[in-house]
Image 1 (tube, rainbow, N blue to C red):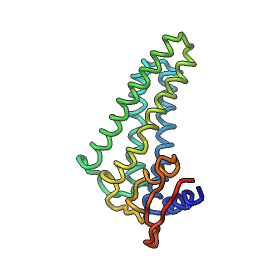
Image 2 (cartoon, rainbow, N blue to C red):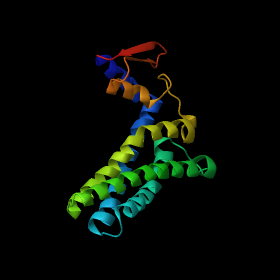
Image 3 (cartoon, rainbow, N blue to C red):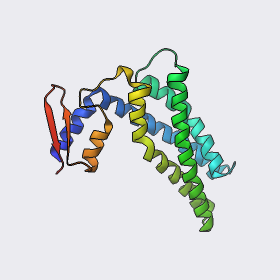
Image 4 (spheres, rainbow, N blue to C red):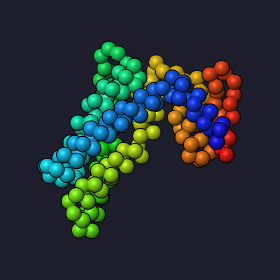
Amino acid sequence: MAAGLEYLKRFLVSPTGKTAVKYSAVSAISIVVSQAVLALTYGVGRVASAVDCNFIATAVATVPSYYLNRRWAWGKRGSSHLFREVIPFWVTAFAGLVFSLWAVHLAESSAHNAHLSHLATSVIVNFASLASYGILWVGKFILFNRYLFGSRVSSSIGSGDATEVLSVLEGDAASVLGEAAGGEKVLVERD
């Protein structure tokens, strides 16, 4: 376990690790925005169905998410490129939305079938939305880092994938091989 923590520490000080921390902060901001909009439009305002309100919440949260990820997390400056950055970002956001809409629809239907109160249904709907985006979170980081914004970011640890750290933390792999900042090989074994 100590070796896994050492690898995690080295990862977090690498360029990719620093970007991952910023991406995580942007994700937290996006979660707060989308969950607040969903709670206000569905839970409080009862503006529309859970699916429609989730669509609105995702659209609202995607705007600050794009700009914060591009400028702060990946340090991109200048004009956005429509076909290399803007459209792919919105496609990934709305691919996540499709998954989230399915989860929210399932949650709302299940809650109604169980004859739960509107408050309980609202909590379940918000949780379903949050959980669906959480499932996609790591994949989006890898996509953004490799193809969308990461052209200027290089890693001094292995391939730079957050998946290496996650495999150590989750215990999915017996070992992970990476490179430390000094170039020496580091073998991280699961305890």
